[in-house]
Image (spheres, rainbow, N blue to C red):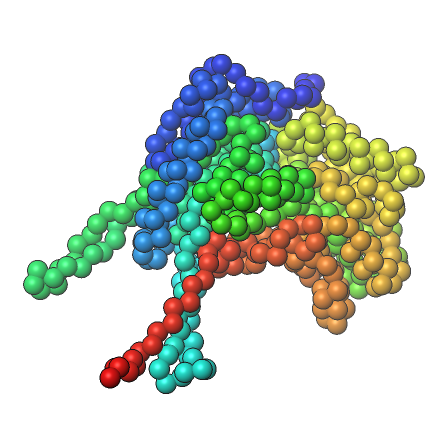
Length: 521
């Protein structure tokens, strides 16, 4: 293998005409800035593609387009929204090869994993379409006046949704969150990560092409049925690419709901900006935050050790470890600690790293130098504090799967998200000790427990301070229809996933009806 480069700049502005365009109001347009963002492939340093470097003016146009579309989205029948969500999924499936390759080129994600991401992207639209059937209002009988009044509780869209997504899943996360917002009947302005915006343009292309045939009945005077072609309103989805536009978008007075996925620092920056600008908004904004994890796994002596090793190696190293669900901290009961450690290290050494376009590659380059540096600092810190390091070697932007042992409470790996293929392993002697260590961080996204004891499994699950607890599998677990979100600093109390996400992008309205009005005399 030739010497691989360290990528100092993952993207940069250029005067060259961009290959892709912004998507505003149903049209693809260039930015008046005349500049492009050149996106660098983290594996070899070549240009992966380019997008416009938008200005605040174009961002305002995108919000205006979304605001205009919001009325049409609100009035679109639920069944039509379902049809169009499925139509977007079909458009994604048509482009699956191209999307997967784009994901790999802009992130360094191994191509086989990029295909999984692209396929999951399509699945999220299908799942949100199906989940819409669960968005039902309710009939509530009056207590004060039960013989004359009842109430209907119905769900309505919020209006304009601003969605800010990170670089680690540049296609799946926009699909996952945009599909929920659209299902709820909102219009969307999507701002993808500046260093991985190419995949989001594919999503815009899918929206532009999506259409469905829908039956319409008319009486002339006898009933006849015909098919009409339906499309999403122009402006239902708008995609803006550029530098430093996230806060501007989130604080725009016409934005009703803001979704941010990223690091704690990113989320808090946006959150604080919204707070400073709350007076200028037409109403307080609903804010959804998913802000990462430092996820623990607890392995008891009665667990199937081979299964635990295999699943936790996957959880620690799949997706290059660049996922909030990654298993970073592993606590193993003392009597099986050495056996687990030996097996885990052996498996880590067998993982193939290299060219992400090679179908046999399992670990590719980290997406940017900041992430590489953060992981190297985590490794250096552990070594200085007495840990043994297996792996820890980097080749350009590729970091070999790394095992840190014995992990100690004072080491960065035990409490701070590394966001790379790094796992710390420590032993424990009691349930109380394992719980204390697992719960000690400011994160609370995912946790895992390996045991054959049902009492122990449920007891630990109830006491772990995590939004999701997996029994006998790694924390690297995701299904788009099930509630997903974190405790503590991992996110706000709202949940993504299926009907939960649709309701997060909706507001409930109560309509009280007096159905037996008395005539006044």
